[in-house]
Every structure is written in C-alpha cells, then in structure tokens.
Image 1 (spheres, rainbow, N blue to C red):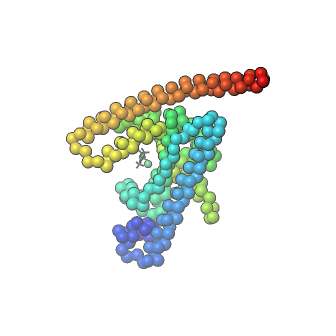
Image 2: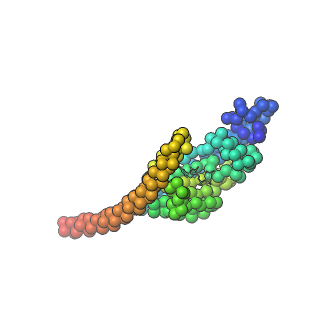
Image 3: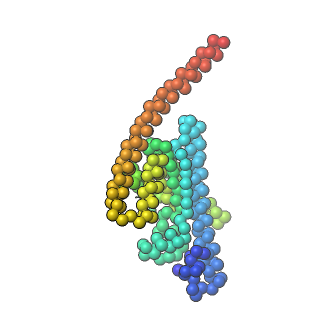
Length: 242
Ligand code: GTP
Ligand code: MG
C-alpha cells in the first residue's frame, strides 16, 4: 500500500519505504487527485453553459448554485479499507465513484430532471449509474437525483475518462439533507428515534411544498408570458400611433 498513497499517509503508513519511493507515491496520488479536479471543472463548465443558455432563452436559471468537493485522502483510504478493496491507485479509481462530487441545487423539481437530461444527453458523457431518490425516497426521507457520470479530460498524454458523482436536488431538499447529515455527527441518546421521525415528517412537508411552489411558479410564468406579449403589443401600437 505504501508505494501508492500520498502525503497524508506518510506518518501512518510509510515505515520501511525509501524517500524516493515515498515521493514517487505522493506524486502519483497528487496526479490522480488533479485528474479528478479537472473532471469537476469539466462538469461545472457544462452546467454553467447550460444555465447561461437557459437564462438567455427562457429568462430564468434552472440552477441556483453548484457546489463541488474532492474526497479527502483519508476518506478514500477508510472507504477502501471498509469495503475490503486493495489500496492501489487503479483499484481506487475503479472502485470509488464519489472521489469527485458535484452538487447541483435547483429551484424546482422539474429543473432537476431538465438539468439531468441536458447534461446526460451530451455525447461525451456516459451515465454509469442513475438513482432517483425523488421518485423513490430513502426511508429517512432523503430525496435527490444521483448520477454517476464518466467525463473525458484532455491531458498532455491524451484523453482520460473520469468518474464524477452528481447529486441534483432542490433548495428545500438540500436544506433538509444538510440538517439530516448533522445527525450523524451528533451523539443522540434516547431522543434519536423522535428526531429521525421528525426529520422524516419534515421531508414529506418539504416535498409537498416543493410541488406547490412549482405549481405556483408555473401559474405565474403563464401570466408573465402573457404580460410580456401584451406589453410588447402595446409598445408596437404606441410606435404605430406616433
Ligand atoms: P456510498 O457512496 O458509500 O454512500 O454508497 P452509495 O453510492 O450507494 O450511496 P448513495 O448514492 O445512496 O449516496 C451517496 C451520497 O449521497 C452520500 O455520500 C451523501 O452525500 C448522499 N446521501 C445519500 N443518502 C443520504 C441520506 O440519507 N442523508 C443525507 N444527508 N445524504 C445522503
Ligand atoms: Mg456513493
């Protein structure tokens, strides 16, 4: 394992390695992490382009915000060990699909599916996995659309296909997931069951609210389009009248 993992493991796992081996291992690990960073850039750019085009054509953004993160070397190591995989760079790249993670936050549920479709139909993207936790929420109430994509990055040595996990959810779903995530870091005692139940209830309320907000938005948009057309005609009439 020593010759494959990078700097963060030096202190814990490097007994017996020569400095040259350690530096070479760290360089290889850093290079792999750089590929994942590049893959995130590719996906982010694709999303930003789609958002701008949507803004130009439809005067609104289907994407509220984009967050991204790279899994830390220690989390990579722990996940590999937990799953009993051999810890080499090839094995890490083969086994883990969430080293590069992109989270897309959308205003409305329909936007989630539009963004997913616009992204996945691009001819350089391969969908390796799709989990719809909106249509099939987790028992705790978790909702999101998860995609594992393969995207090419172009290096001096040629093309390399990289895996990126993309989570797409509404602002409300993200708010819920952030709070729910914290439950894992807190030491709850007897009140844990109650909190889990309360969170599940909130997830349902949030989903219903997402649907209502979307319906209201659709109604408003119909009115807005009409007004746009109306004011355009009024302008035309005024110009003709002058
Ligand atoms: P792991 O990546 O090992 O978790 O397995 P998996 O790929 O089968 O998991 P899944 O696609 O279901 O979830 C991957 C990621 O989605 C997690 O790392 C979290 O970021 C997020 N996620 C999944 N389930 C939950 C949940 O119940 N609550 C919250 N807050 N986030 C979740
Ligand atoms: Mg995962």
